[in-house]
Amino acid sequence: MTLSSMSSRARLVACGLAVAAVLSGCASAPIPEQQVSLSRDAVNRAVSAEATQYAPLEMKAAQDKMFLMERALGEKDYPQARLLAEQIEADANLAERKSRAVKWQKQLTDARSGIQVLKQEMLQDPVTGFNPPASAQ
Figure 1 (tube, rainbow, N blue to C red):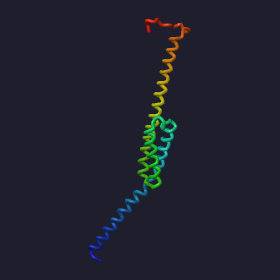
Figure 2 (figure 1 turned 120 degrees about the horizontal axis):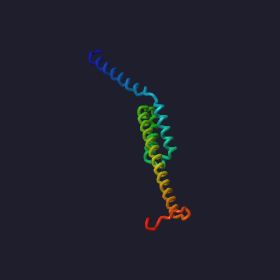
Figure 3 (figure 1 turned 90 degrees about the horizontal axis):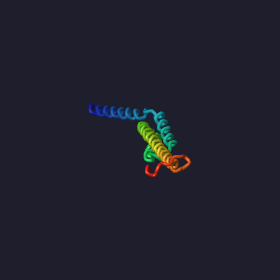
Figure 4 (figure 1 turned 180 degrees about the horizontal axis):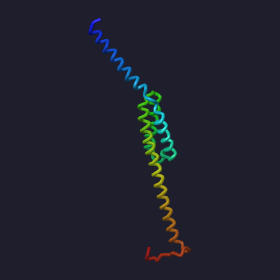
């Protein structure tokens, strides 16, 4: 064996070890069970808050990423699954909060409308004893 063939063989072995180390590093990434669970809980809360109706864009983003996360889990691409799970949780939380805000705003508008109707009824009902002069209107 010559010195150059041993050098080539040593490089080949070193390269093989490096590839094995990289592959073992990828394979050793733990399943992001906690983050996946948090993301699923966030989506369930958003659905309960009627986010599909009141925050459809945010909810669709979360659901699309949920599909991608499930695929990444199936392919054992755990780093990608973790990243998607974190994004899902953020999207679902945004959808839930936006949905609740829209519903609260609607309730506030309805309450104000109801108060206005009651005021008009009180002003027009002669039984209440309050009948403002025509010049005051």
